[in-house]
Length: 268
Image 1: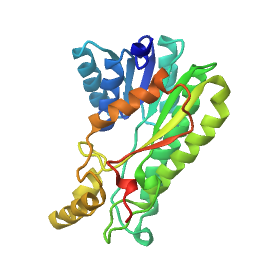
Image 2 (image 1 turned 120 degrees about the horizontal axis):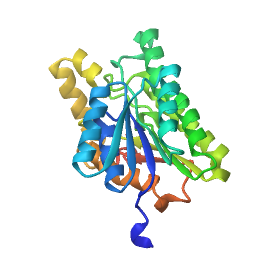
Image 3 (image 1 turned 30 degrees about the vertical axis):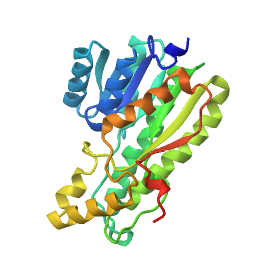
Image 4 (image 1 turned 180 degrees about the vertical axis):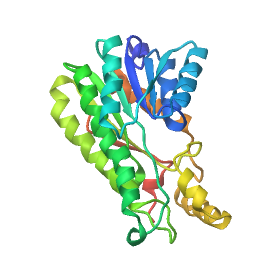
């Protein structure tokens, strides 16, 4: 039995933000361990590409369109999923954005509202519908938080926005509350707090507004803090995601696991 501890055969997984970056790696990883993966994204072309990559690796996947900030869009996605699958077993709330970073007194209210709608409200809208297809359990929900949701970081230049940090801290509180509510139904809810992983589109707005010197200073600041002295890449997270999705973590719920190359272990 131990050799099957991480297998996901027969399981149905939904991954939001699966069109690129971390979400694409999560989808490919879950499929490699046997899950059927619904690759959901606002960018349907990206979701289709991810599903195609899964199929090229002999996995099972399909694409779905969703804007996690829009209640009607979320409801429509889950209506379609429910028509095809009697239940789901795994949800990864990965969809999220990061806006241009600046100090709090300069930060636009419109950017706060836009980011919160996706990063926090979107997790709520998606999870409440997923739970209905997981009950009476078991199931696994994995929420993507951030090390910026665990503690502040100001290296003398903008490295993350106040809305991003607040939203990711909110994801942690959300994770623990839902974990407490559904533990008796064996629906486990955990969060991953990634560190500075490259290979994603998350920092596109910040990079577009930054000068070459800004980017250089930013990279130097974060590398100085990472104990391993290098960024992670999306595929580095696959093992942890599969662990939390599988029976290997059947007694783990309400936890926040930093995946940061030792970032949180270093005294600033």
